[in-house]
Image 1 (spheres, rainbow, N blue to C red):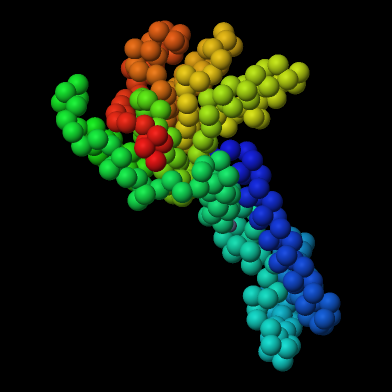
Image 2: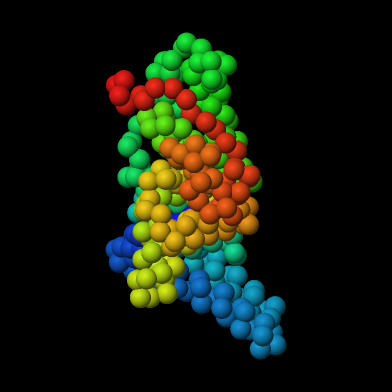
Length: 318
Ligand SMILES: [Zn+2]
């Protein structure tokens, strides 16, 4: 799972906060029952003494025996103190935030499930702030699409779009970083943004790192990174490395040479990395060919799965 840096940073901050709260709770108990703190320090010390004796080559056996005897006595007093004051063993465990990783968020190199869950939550929050807020497959309405047969399609837009809808849903249900890239092509108000938002939500809900942006914003970030004076690619790295990138509204941007090359870079870098991208555009495939660099076009039309949207502008009908 590769999350945008902002998401990872916020998730880590929350874990840190939880660790501090757990430590503060333990400190508070020690403050109230100083004898408990003494006992816990003693217990730690006697462990250290055994280890030291082992290394010093002294009489390890009798050191262990003596430590065991002392520990038993201390532990008995400790559990008596806990009972008498209505405390649980776990109340004094500052690692209680997560027993698997001790609250660090990582087990070796691997991200622990506690931090992953926080990332998932933060990722959802970030997407919700970008999306309109109510896109879901359940609320997609095929009745907005004409039921009469369109001779150019050989079927009705409604039946055509039922297939498109089913494919989007299946794509989200079975998403993995090996999923193919999709190209949504069709006129304004045919549900391209809506369905890509549905996919974004569900895939984020499944725990993947999702970045959803308009092409204009993405290009602005690339420009800032390039011309902003500093060689800082923090803002653009997420577009190249997230599990799923969704680029909305291709074709609305100012097509400068810089924009052309940045678009190529994004499409190509993700293709090489084997990471899926969803691009939506009002342009038809032939308009794409005549608008973008041949190397961009060949990748979009050659490797993306094309989903064409047909019908009447839903926004006008509403
Ligand atoms: Zn953990």
